[in-house]
Image (tube, rainbow, N blue to C red; front, side):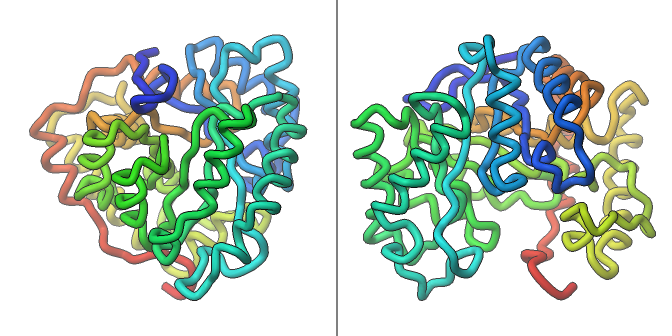
Length: 328
């Protein structure tokens, strides 16, 4: 497992991170014992960055991770999140930070995260979403600074809202965040425009999420695939979205074949290597449910870089599809 720095102020982390959303049971039924086995397999393979959130199964993911790390806590950097108080997701331009991330609310939520994870200090606390409307008065981030000074938090981060990822650029330049978590994959390459260069300039750590486009870039789903209602992807790929996605996945597969990639390198491997290609990226988190997935994901770090010619061709698959919150 290769390692990279999580920005200028962070620790060294594994190139492949463990995505803890499936542990909450929202990617289909999930057994806690299997989750713990998967996490242990990932740790054994050198994975040390674990990403979770209270919204992943109403705290279930955090609790499972805490249990799995008993006796192994010093092997992992755990990144969790604080969601905004009740209101639209993502926050609208008319939301006030006082209503969504008030100081008292943030302090209470951080204490909940500490209890759920069974720790005295959070390695990385990320605000789970944001709006550009708060950039000129980013009081929630100043509250997190106070909590850091009090020893409750080590690193401060923000997960970008899907419809406006570039809202974090000003925050990085103002030195208000240590880490940003962004979407970057073969279909969504917007972060390459400015976020990555700004992260390098400001020594901000970058965590990439959704590298497999919620599973579609594994190439294992046909055009007519349907997810069960218990799986959040039943809404993500609603209507004809899976059919349109499968067509584009086939085009990516054709590019890989044209460049002579062997069957030993799967489409998922290519997608993760693509997400790892920018130098600014610290780690790519991949949702993991089983021991087999944990081992397959971890091995991607040891694969060779994608050939420059293939990497160039893959950039053409950037898909300006907008954000799939509703409709088609």
